[in-house]
Image (cartoon, rainbow, N blue to C red; front, side, top):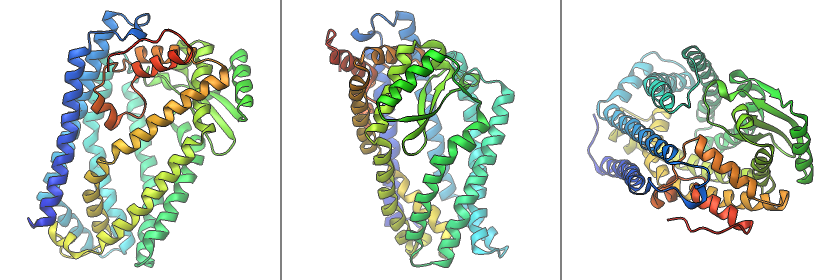
Amino acid sequence: MIQFNALFAGFLALFAAAALTRYALTRVNISHLREHGHLVPETFRDEIDGATLSRMRDYTVESSRFHSLESLFDDALLIAVLLGGVLPWLSDLIEASHLHPVWSGVLFFGTLYLASALLEIPFSLYSTFVIEKKYGFSTITPQLWLIDLVKSFAVSVILMALLFIPFFALIHLLPQSWWFAAWVFFALFQMLMIWLYPLVIAPLFNKFTPVQDETLRERILAMAGNAGLRAEGIFEVDAGKRSRHSNAYFTGLGKSKRIVLFDTLLATHSHDEIIAVLAHEIGHWKLRHLLKQLFAIEAVAFAGFFLVYRLMGWPMLYETFGFAGPLPYTGLLLAAVLLKPLVFFLTPIGAAISRKYEKDADNYVRGLIGSTRFLAQALKRLAKENLANLHPHPAYVAFYYSHPPLAERVARLQAMNGEEVVKVGR
Ligand SMILES: [Zn+2]
């Protein structure tokens, strides 16, 4: 039985505060869009007409309403699971089979993962086959969707086993200092994944073929060379078999990089625009943004592992949430439940750092290719194709946005080239 003590009250208050903040931000963002959504920002005048603008508005409203509903469902489910005593019941069931502590932990988390993966299916179906289809993004067939589901489930199970088995073994073997060992293991695992993901996991879902266009290849290689980067390969990925959303990215550690271009980007953008988008990506690499972000993640993880370790040794945690006694895996889950709303309130810090990095990478483009004109043009095209929200509320931007709002970003890029500086509303 849950004990309605100060700890539980504190948790509920924090949890409710996070849920309300999320809801209020979505509300304010939608009503801001309702109010300003009929205006085309000056910088987009040549690219976007009234019909596109209203599609942008409808898509933003519909998809954010849907995400709101999904997180409301998740919140309600978590509270129901906690109050309904599902977790102590599950752990009693597992303990009754007298498994090795490592396997009990794996079984506990495996069961919870399976349940949440199943519950997510209807949401994924609706988002892919109703919303994304309605706005012309989704190109995926039901067969491919099903194959993806099975594959990603298999990959998750393998990755979880590779993470959780050593993790619970460390807790078992080093009861006092596991948190430090686990942190080192986690950091190494992350590096390994950065290296392995593009080579092993991504090819399970997509086909990567070298870009055939000789002119484009040469321009990319020349630009990468100017920036001091060795392109290990320039690939086209068949992203278009799932969705019309378009993008480009870099993978790999050190100087040697794989450059990946979505087929959807290749199909709709000029060479100049693709070069400009890649110049921006090179900027992230040159300015060591990924490395800095990785260090920040490891620093936060260090504090996080220690905090989880301390929380797990606190008997009141187990009593409050209705457990008979402390167990490593239930302690781990409860610590995660407790920390989740706290982590939510850290979102704006990460978002602000990321927006700063985006501006720096935009600045870098000018130095590398001489002008930001084509990047501005590419961003306008991307905004139109992806039906981006051109009127986000400033509070929503401050909290969530990893990139500066598009109207502001494009205006800034154009101003950098001495083009007419147009004031955009907010
Ligand atoms: Zn960027």
